[in-house]
Amino acid sequence: MEEYLAVGKVINTHGVRGELKVLPLTSDVSRFNYLKLVWVERNGNLLRFDVEKTRYHKQYVLIKLYGVDTMDKAREFKDCYLKVDRENARPLDEDEYFIADLIDCEVYENDTLLGTVTDVLQAGGNDCYVVKGKLYGEILIPAVQSVVHKVDIGNRKISVSLPEGLVNKK
Image 1 (cartoon, rainbow, N blue to C red):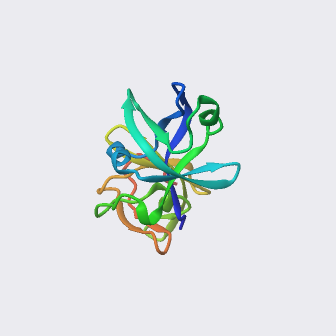
Image 2 (tube, rainbow, N blue to C red):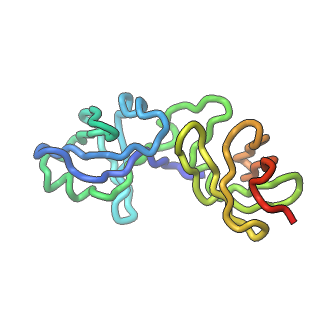
């Protein structure tokens, strides 16, 4: 399992005092209110920063990091991911999972391997697992209780029942 979880992506700077304009990658944007430190992934390295201030602007989060006090310094982090370490991540509710933990899980319907999770789309009312496999190619599986029966992160396995008409079964 990944020890660091992406919570946002720096898409630009904001202002001249070093604020970062961040696209949130979490379903719970309020988590940024409690963020005390972040790791910035830059050129394959993780850099630790304490969070000075957080505020919101439209669909973005504006974050001021200690030691990043100019637009030029903030610009160095454009297109970088902001991460939190797992122990400081927001606790999850039952039946909630970090996307990083779902990626590469094998997906089965009964004993038939459908493929592996390559991405999770967060659009609308519920997430969809992007599953790629040999049997059906790429399919989108709605992450709803009637379809996803069991998620076993430890064994990297997800059990599902595909809805009628989702795939052309042969």
